[in-house]
Amino acid sequence: MHRTTTTLVSLAAAAVMVAGPLALTTTTAQAADTAERRAAAYTVKAKVNKDVVTVGEDVVKVRGKVTPRAAGAKVVLQQRLDGKTKWAVSTKAKVKRNGTFLLKDEPSVAGTREYRVLKPKSQGIRKGTSKVLSVEVYRWESLSGQPAGANANISAYGTARIGTKVYSPSLMATNPSASGYVEYTLGRLCTDLRTTYALDDSSESGSTGAVKLLVDGVTKVDQGLVVGQVVESTTDLTDAFRLRYELASSATPVGRTVVGTPEIRCTK
Image (cartoon, rainbow, N blue to C red; front, side, top):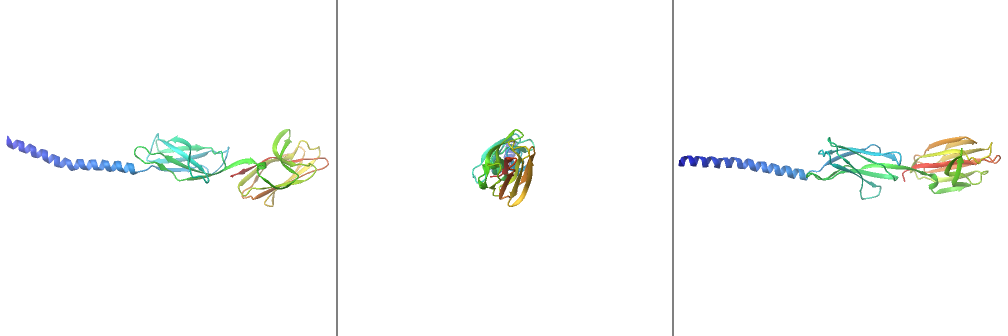
């Protein structure tokens, strides 16, 4: 009886000796795994669909992927304007089952805009952010909103009628029977100009007119006009420093040449 007891005790002791190291190894592995997860951070990759957009015409779409996959979790699109240091929240979206996401933004202010995607910390994994993405935002604005340089006999805020339609503000001669000119400095911040060339409805039958547009001294438009003629025009202003409009109209019959609601597409 004593021998049997001794054998059982010996077996139990041996079991403890064997289980002890295994239990210690398992506990250590779990602790290491937990520590690794706590030390890890989300990896966020992102890219934009366009690096040049226009206010009111384009939508910035930011696509990307989060690793580890965080299905159902939210990612945050942050943005800041050129020269700013703080990031602002633009919008949020859920991560799909495969770890991908899609975020959208519609810029309303011209200038250089920076974006990044943030995946907040969760499940013991630290937050992660994507690289900074830069987008150049342009906006159509009235040419009359720019300070005029040298000028003579030109009103930048006139109200014209072309085919009974109102165009305001427009460039037009203060004295219809005299020629005039006006210059604007754009500083190479604009890419396009769009406008309408015509004779105002107040022009007498048989009158004529002409519009000349020079960009840094090079003639881009040289358009003759008659009553009833309407010319829709777009001009490339890429890298343009200064533009100059020259308007002329016949004195008899009296004509009035109009540059209807000219707009420029600029970044600042």
